[in-house]
Image 1 (cartoon, rainbow, N blue to C red):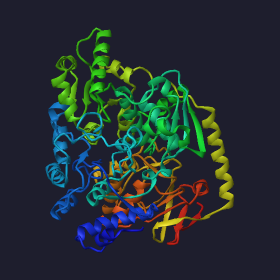
Image 2: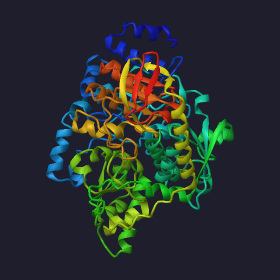
Image 3: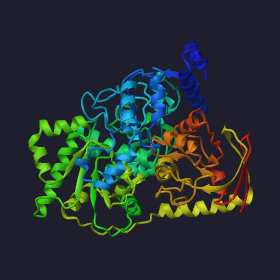
Image 4: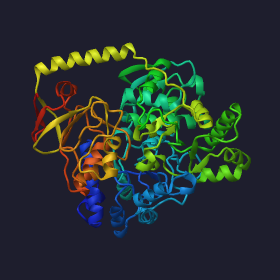
Length: 603
């Protein structure tokens, strides 16, 4: 990378050892992603780190080291929601409360450090900082270094700001330095769309389901979406804002989408139209049948799939004031239709702290209407709530595909969820429809695998973190969700990491520690940075990561953090090509050389 004189001075230690380490990490990260230079950050930060959750938040000790060094972010920042410590609002048992206190015993230390490092204000805890005035709403074109996947995709897409998907911990370090590597979505060419997605449904599709369908298809690509303008109209009003919030959260959690363009709606699409499409873009159509098939494919992860629902959790990402009003109507209408006064399923709706105050004080009649149903309000993080095993093992319903992805919560769409909340009864699930496209894709994949195995057993890629490694292969042909895969092992402090991503059918329930993980790319939460740092620190990481495509920003950041802050290199090779994944099979012996040469011994 080409560094300025100021940046070289920091790298040489002239601003202290801690700033030197931060700059070393940023340079290593940028070089992996082939950035030519660093650029100045131009606006407030938003970070997915908010408390003391292992593998999601920055280690408390690291935060305190930064404070002790006298460091602070260039601009103020907002954070993801507070930990679930508002027990009265969550309807939990004494045993669950004790477990939360144990899980978040260092929460006070983390919050004290965050205030000293530049926290914006006491309302700054939300994953939807853009849905209320005086929140965190960047301007079009602002250069940022944000994390929290749902915030990143909204800032890029609906606001036209510019931020890559920055991993947890790296987000804070970048904002302390006030600089971030110039690559990907920070540059004009990196914001062009490589997918054209046509929404060909009869009515406006559920945003969390549509987002999942898009994320599944494009993975870490950039979609140019047509067909929504006829339902939503031009531009972005409050209703459209909330729709894009929900859709984007699912795009980012199920895939790795950090930017989408919507014809006639998002700012860059309004300005440039089809000029945003790359010449060699791919095309895909999403129909009602595709969405029906998708929701029917989701497994029920409850211990007893036929259990009666214990709780409903709504607001991942956090709800806006408009959505609180909408859910009040939804729930009260369902109760009225069933001739009931109060809900059957204990329900928690979560929103930003300031939005909750507005709801209570500015519209007291609507608040009293919801309160009379028995529903609860909180400003917490639903993912953190579900990460308490005593809560996560309950039969929990949600309207959030993001929450479903990372936990055992069961996805139910909005109108049906309101009915279940009112009655406690879950209707039978529709059978899955297998599309002709799925059948063709499976046949082609089987054919290509058979042919490839006859031809090649040696491949060359780009050695990112060098090492001579010999390990058995574990193979997934879908994106590797770092948080969903490792999180159970992190929470339970296991000495082996068993894959917990129930959407990754090839590797779910299999050991990730000490193997050669062979994948196309990684997907999911920007918490991946903290995840990789922690699995490296605890020595439960894979022996090596082998990617058929180019490494993404989250993996690059996570592996850089593992090397610089956990002092444990996780070797990685990318650009091995699609044929590599078509050749390698689970259990094959993999030999990797420092030069990026990969040799497969077929089992």
